[in-house]
Amino acid sequence: MQLHEERVVAERNELDDKIIKLSIFINSERYRGLPSEEKDRLSRQRDVMREYTKILGKRILNFPK
Image 1 (cartoon, rainbow, N blue to C red):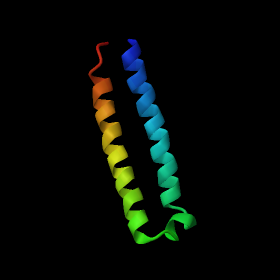
Image 2 (tube, rainbow, N blue to C red):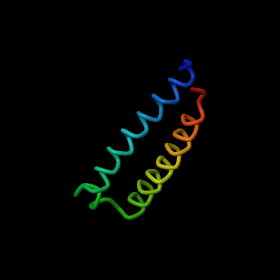
Image 3 (tube, rainbow, N blue to C red):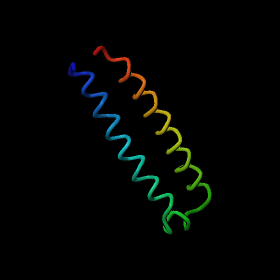
Image 4 (cartoon, rainbow, N blue to C red):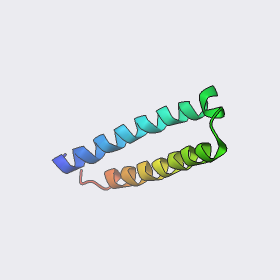
């Protein structure tokens, strides 16, 4: 695997970890206490992060074998 491909894989792994942590937070009591506008922003952030990780995954699938 080339260096730039390794960086894409690392980026996706880091992003997936952040998505998991954000999802845990979204299911927490602390999240429920936030103003609705902030909860909306955090939910939207997670949606965008999920889309981004899908794109990275498609890029990885197309790396030369």
